[in-house]
Length: 422
Image (cartoon, rainbow, N blue to C red; front, side):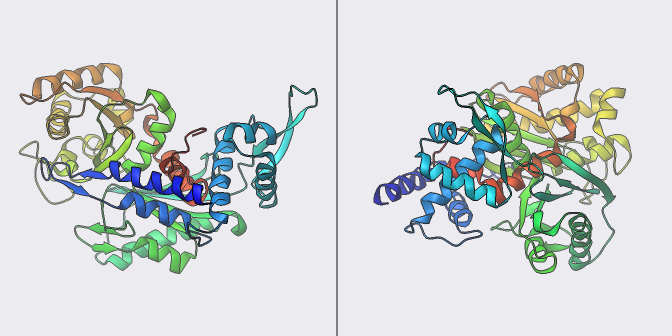
């Protein structure tokens, strides 16, 4: 146990090396030390069954997460091959697997070939064993879905953002939407609710800070009213996690800017594969002299190139705009913002995500040319890429992030250095 504690502490200390958050756009080089990574680890390890690092069951719990992640990412394991892949003894692996079977999360499904000649039972994660509700808060529309353990969307609906004047009215609207979807799930199989948004958050990411309504305590509201676990997360963070999982080793190793281009626009910075900063204010960067934004200002980026600005509809889809042909004026406005991102962050790659991922090759080529022409003297060249998640990724990314936080703890075991499977 002492050796295990030393390993855990070494990875906790190592995590401090990656805890520098760069404040985008508000200050060119403001760097501050954050303990968010450490807090994430401690919170994740104490979520459902409070544990201290000194207790024997801590190691078992982490190994349980590792087993769950292995089965989440592959359906080609037997107990023996799973133990070998994770470098665990067969007895402990067998006990963990049997526990997951008792919880209704895992089952034997068919057989695998074995070198000993005896077929081994193939382990399978039961994708409909649990469900998660996702809610995405856009600037004009709110979308919600039910997903299973494979992050497959089973039910989806979209509603216009309500015109309310009090924070409790907006929170109440969101909770009623969540309750509606939760009622469609078997109660015993509900993991919880994840809410994503392009917005400002309080320090511990339990409330959204709305510029008009003030603080919206969504995590507390879900816990008290809906009585299920909840996660509140910037949508860019959820999208990056999903993007990184799809690209895996192909994810650019240099500094990467990730632009969530939808009905709201936000940006995130990824350094050495880690999310270093999130910023929702890029959507309100002034790029033109006309165009009324939802924030009340004139000329904001969102007022020029968001999905609602380009389609003239609250629930407009950028894919239809790109199919019809996006104007050079709109691309030039976006290029101005991208040039600022390039100058401030030094990013050598920019991934266009959200609905904007539907951009076609011709428009992407034109946008790249505008960015190159707008590039500020002294800044490095920046290559534009369209996300492989395409424009339907918001629900999938949110579901993946919620499953990670509430069940699989992928981010936790990666923070602890276990990258053998994930």
